[in-house]
Length: 108
Image (cartoon, rainbow, N blue to C red; front, side, top):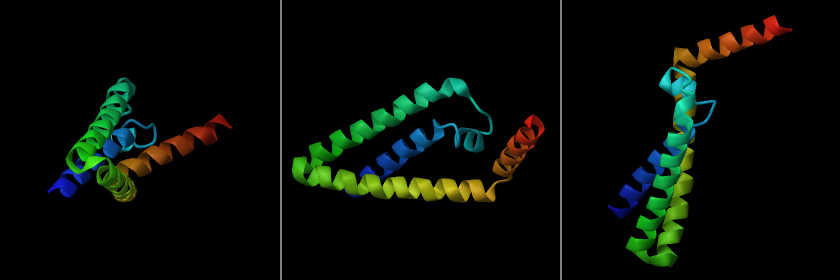
């Protein structure tokens, strides 16, 4: 149960950090909310640090830190693959890319 909970916490943290980036925010949230950058980023870092405290508190410094780093790598990879799949199979990312390409061509 420790490993599942730690993995879920870390996936949530990396998802929050991904939602705070300029690239993924309009794709996932459908709009570019600039006011949400700081709350999303701070919540992501808060969940990352609390999951480290949970891992170290539950399994000790040696095993907890190793488990945290392993689960963090797995969670980051899963969130990254999930974002790739999300952007590939939604129409909104295509329309956003298409509109930005059209604007850059008009600017030239």
